[in-house]
Length: 45
Image (cartoon, helix red, strand yellow):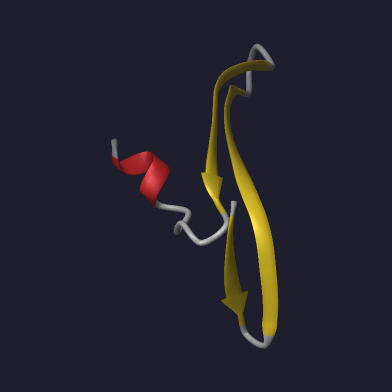
C-alpha cells in the first residue's frame, strides 16, 4: 500500500479494478494496485 495526495487530502491504501460482463453478470478479472498508481496503468498490459 502507498500514500498519495489528491487536492489537499492524503489517501493511503489500495484500489481494486474489476472487469465484468454486463450481459451475464460475471466477474472476468480483478486487479489491485497501490493508491498512488494512475487508473490507466492496469489497462496498459
